[in-house]
Length: 484
Picture: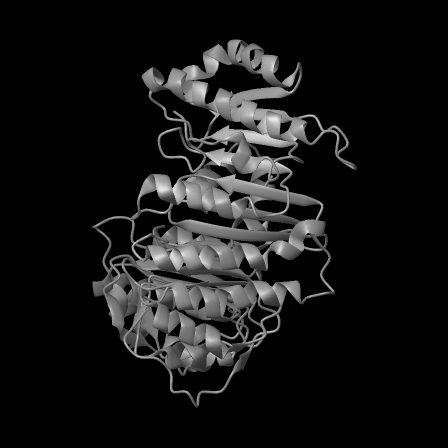
């Protein structure tokens, strides 16, 4: 089995060379296995780098240029490390660079030479201070580059290295205008994954900028500092097909028109994809996040529409947008699986009225088959739940789960009382419809994820809840995310 360099620390090659001394067989295997030697780390000594480059033979190289100690001299990049790589430059397949802003000038010098076989480049300024300095990487020549990550680093945005990408990740960059972003996207029609996060721009593209076609796009994440900028980029992407999308909202920024004009149209576009056999729906409302997922038979990952940073500062906009979203999802009534995931209501408005409003709206969904409850009794959308509110929504429910229960043990009893009451209400809702045609008499399965401090009471909790839903229908496990 091949050792994994990233998990073996900077002494990977030292350990590998030590293993060569165990016996002649191990020595021959290690020496004559080029794939063990194709990761070239600047943190290794020049002697080790020389041995690795020789023993890697004709293997493609993964070069890692990371500052791991304050004792490293940035001049070694241009006067030692890069010259050692020069004879093997055409073997470069992947390069990961993470350096302080003050060292980026050395990177600019080091990466002037064309790279004909490089496929993946990740360039990170660990202080995110060098974004204003545009680096002309590889003199604009890296014809096989298809996966690019820039974190706090700007390059020449008209550079040919940005052409024909498949994966593009941009973080902590200030763009002159959305025109710059659109220009980059327009030269990579094969893009499948685009993430532009924590980026900023003060200007939007001129209306005359041509539309962009990205027919292979499967995931798009935009966080551009303002909805105007985000909306402008979305408006120029023409018919992206079945593509997941995440948008970040911003405090006190009006979002009503954006939701109605852009994101609801995205859902409508999914609906129109008659060739895609949708099987299941997930709707999640939790704090500042609103998520809609549609699963299909031919995709390993569901289509997802995610809004982050939702708040109720503009309460009236939320009260207009959520009903429209529910209306848009009415067509999902024929899907096999309908899941609902509810946590806390968005921040910024009266909690009780927000909870009641959300319950009223989600109750207009087709009956769900699965409910996931996130959080505790104090902040849950389901706090104060009444059977009359949800009898139609939960009449077909088959699975019910609770997670992110408060880790404070002294609060656990009152929370479990609330969980018990909620289970009873949902069980009654399911049983109230047992005489309806096609109900099928489904059995309710309950999963409760508790903090580690309460897992010792697992048997007691299982016995307690089985009194409600029957033997063998309760699972109590440790909450690895929300519990300690």
